[in-house]
Image (tube, rainbow, N blue to C red):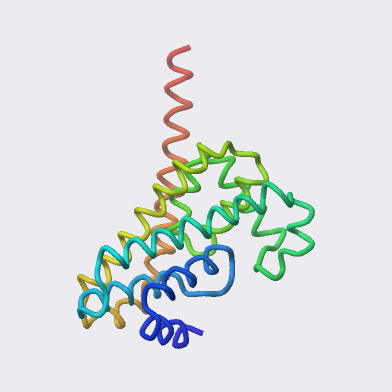
Length: 199
């Protein structure tokens, strides 16, 4: 699948970046980080222009996560569990996304982009949880900007070394996920302690 995705980007450029990210964020098995890093590499090679590549990647990410959010709002938990298998949505994965919301609230929409298997789930969970559209937009779209910028920059800065480093991206992302969870829990504990101290 990864080789096919890279071939599509090489052949169709900006259109492939947009549509692949839409489907990847919705939940289809598309290697999003690899896609973005490779796109950054193509910018480095001069095959893509940075403003257009960034705009297409951001638009694809924003459209994908918005569709996921709207599906969560319209279909609800029960329907998603029944038909979610086509988008790799299982009860366990949705429960994990709900747990994220319970721990770090709307920030899950922002940091969830950087955690494998989480970014599209948080949008479904936000929709099911009736998160207000303006709140969803602020947190989800700011996360998309950070995520797209990070991986396009990574591909651009690594240049010809992008492929060797890309193989370890998921490993580093897992450690990043652990660090984010630890920081989030630490923040919640600190905030609770400050409130108790204030009382």
